[in-house]
Image (cartoon, rainbow, N blue to C red):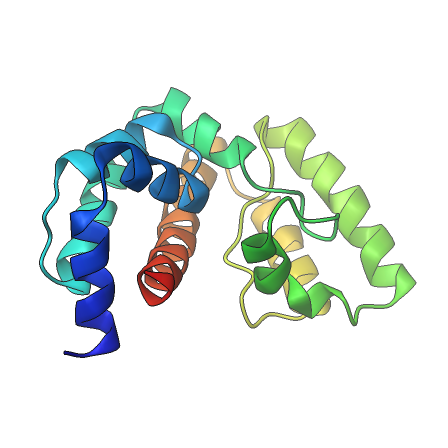
Length: 166
C-alpha cells in the first residue's frame, strides 16, 4: 500500500471529531471542515482534493471570511507551522521588501476588507510583493475570485500534508 493510500485510509477511519479538527487545521472554515468530513470515505487522495474544491466553491462569503481569518498577513509571524513553511520565502527578504509588504498588506485590507491571501509556497518575498502590488489594482469581485482560487491551492497543499502525516 502506498503512503498516499495509507494516508487516505487513515483519514477516512478517523472519528468525525478527529477528522473535523484535522481539516480545520487545514482551513479554518467550520462549514468547510464539516462538509468535507461528511463526505467521507473518499478512498483516494484525488477524491478528497476534488471534494475540497467543490466544497470551497460552494462556501458562502461569510465562511470564506472565516477561512481567511485563519491566515496570517504575508511577512508577519505565521500562526502555524504550515503558514511558516508556506511563507519561508519571505525569511530571506530584505528590510525594504518587508516594509513594503507591511504597507501593501495595510492598503490591501483597507481596499478589500480582508487579509491578502496568496499561495506563498515557493515564492520569494519579492514575488509576493509583486503579486500584492498587482492585485491591489483588481476590483473587489475579481479579487474575491482570486482569493478563492488561492485558498483552494493552499487547502490542497495542507490536505496533502495531512494525508502524509496520517
